[in-house]
Length: 209
Image (cartoon, rainbow, N blue to C red; front, side, top):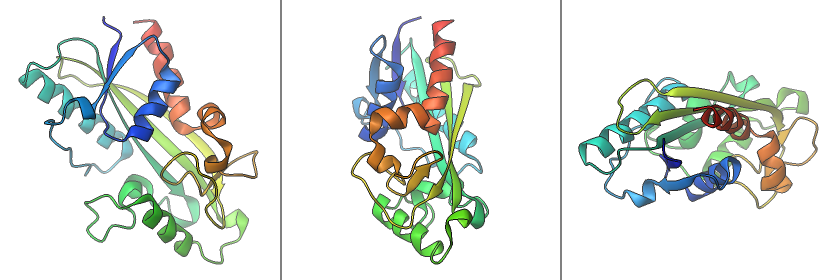
């Protein structure tokens, strides 16, 4: 099996984070290399459902268009679960502030809404976790993907801080630290993060197949 991986994302921050974690022994493509691939509506009821849907949609499109016959298709979906909000924003994390609940909203808008929802909540009522599910499918085969999951426990800060990362990183303080993912930087984040945990499992699995 070739060492080529297609990352089913057009998010440059996410794609680079995945490549950094999996390492240079693989070659990578992203959705930016397939501009005609259809956009997938992330309307599944769970994070895992969205990851599987994105992976299989791209497998199917690549097969129909003869664009790729070997390698792996990697799709991930992740979400932030805040306990006092009954797990919200959860599967809706990317579109938390959207008025349509179908289109993604900006990181800034999502972060602002979350802070408003947690106004006056004390620290022990701000517990949360990042959760990630990665679906890995084989190119050319429309079959159930392999699933890898990771999570990271922490809490939501009172305000955003830091210039690193994306999404809710400036608000999320992992357990054992007093600064956010946005301040910790990519190297430390990769050791702690939900996506890092899932990708390490995936990397170990790939090494055996």
